Image (cartoon, rainbow, N blue to C red; front, side, top):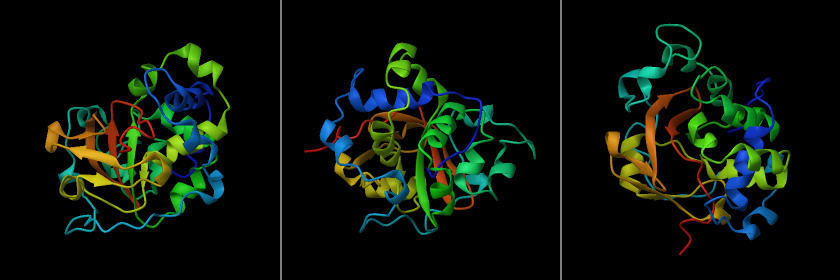
Length: 225
């Protein structure tokens, strides 16, 4: 997600992401953090042989699914499907009421412009509740740790655009944080999971990305084997 520059959310979300890399129920390897490239140059798409689907991963409003989709604003209101569709992904996410903490984290990592400029990507976007699971104490403890934050954010972005069918067909996909190992996709429709995280609202179309809102912050290194 290239820097979502949205003010007012605070640095707690940054630490939330950093926690995912450093502990709090996950065991993201410190080696992936220390070896991660700088955010400004880390969004190059890895090579992948997986097919993103007949549509090239591009979706429409009619393709959106999941229990949390009904929580999006309706019509042309900010954050609605109609509103987000024409915008690049970071700008679109900034209006999504499910993603306020993720937006703050992307802004803190200076990735708004990076994400917006990618031609075709897939974003696994943790909902606000996913960050809430990590706890405020750790948020504050690790706030501002860009070295830990950047590789976690990269692990939530695929350098290729996938729709839900393409993800299901691939089964395992590489994120921009290749050192973090593959991301495992299981199930389909309302039962789809990403590294065990449930998809709350999937196939959300934006100008340059297909977005899947998930209920857990993904941990780099989980599926290395």
